[in-house]
Image 1 (cartoon, rainbow, N blue to C red):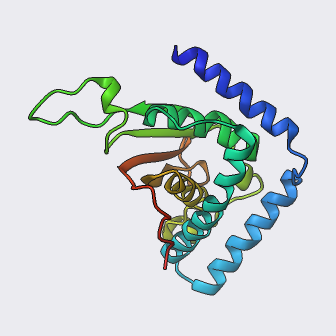
Image 2: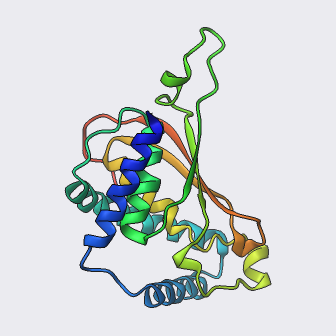
Length: 208
């Protein structure tokens, strides 16, 4: 069942990318983003703060992108967090960045008081999925200097904010963080998304 659904999501993502008329040149996009990160480093002179600012910018982008995404994809509400991961990877990333990360799911640890089925676990707080990016358009021409590596810069941290902002708009509070990045010498680039809780149907409060 999931394999069929997965293929359908992949097809939707490809169709959305092909039909998008406002594509930006990937090289221009990467260079523009790179210039933005450099400017933030010069402004703050603190890599932890740069990470924070990139995430906040991504959050603001995500709260706006989700409207376009929902309107163009015509997808309904996901049944559980596992399905959220499939949609994010195969439709979301594909339609906006023309990449399809590999998604790996992990249910929440079962509570000690009573066992919970794996199916139900995928929709409870603590459920996670990991996105493995085989390619990253943001980092196409980037090589981080030693200072940035030692300072702990997550160059593409804007993606974490985009995911947090967009999912919050559909009533999911999540924690999103990079686990690894090839720019930092890791073997792969991985982002972990953890469900914290489902929100009430209300307008989310923006970051201060």
